[in-house]
Image 1 (cartoon, rainbow, N blue to C red):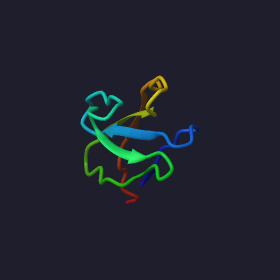
Image 2 (image 1 turned 90 degrees about the vertical axis):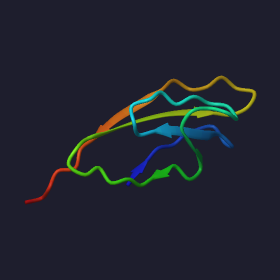
Image 3 (image 1 turned 180 degrees about the horizontal axis):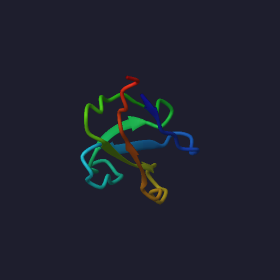
Length: 76
């Protein structure tokens, strides 16, 4: 599980796991979650996943894009 957050109360997050760029707004690109939650669960499998996220709230400018690369490493 990965946790992402925004400091702005009432903000939303949009994220992608396929390398595409998320966008804010009501019809933005990516999966939307409330910033208060911020939990993303995904299996990485044998390959890496690129997580990109943006925070937005109506009436405010969108945040910059945050990006992280996650790779599953077997303990064996």
